[in-house]
Length: 127
Image: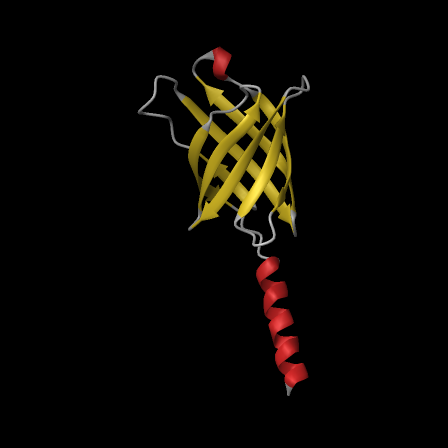
């Protein structure tokens, strides 16, 4: 009986750890409360604890456009937080932390070049 309970607990931990909460296309609305008008879109695929994908900042102002950024990173063990790195085609990079909750991601820039906005709330657009 103890072996069966232990087995069921291990299965539940394994199934919890394999939920890919960051997979999909996420985006922000136009920033209405700030002076810069931009749209941030990120498409990610999560495989266990690794993340890869692309991101882009588009704007009416040409200096705010980032072009396509490569996204790489990893998910922390509980699956709600991820650390990503965004790399421009020129080699400049920026790092950010993502926290997912109720199909909304809080995007917080940690350091690097000014490729992306500092703080954003992005919503899931589609899988």
